[in-house]
Image (cartoon, rainbow, N blue to C red; front, side, top):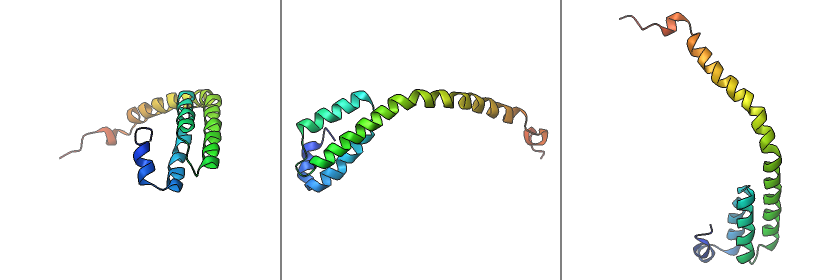
Amino acid sequence: MRENWEKMTKSFPENGIVHLMGGAESLDTVALENEVREFFAQHPVKQGEMATAQMLEQLGVNVRLRQTESPKLTQHLAPAQEAGSCAKKEEVTSAPKEVMAAPSV
């Protein structure tokens, strides 16, 4: 979006730009949040002041959610990932002999 902003603003009506910028709320890291905020401060959307404010608010919520929940989610999923890899090995080694045997011709 940043690289093609001028093309986009010439090609789409203002209300179209408002809808396109909504995807920026998924850029949910602190570094990307700062870039998004800086970008829209420098490139205001004429008919989208409220939409920009709402998108930036949702972006902030998403960043905070990621910061607080990522470590918990990683910790919660780590045992399942380890168990999953062990279970897959177990499935292969404990398959019935007729499944593992080569077909007779």
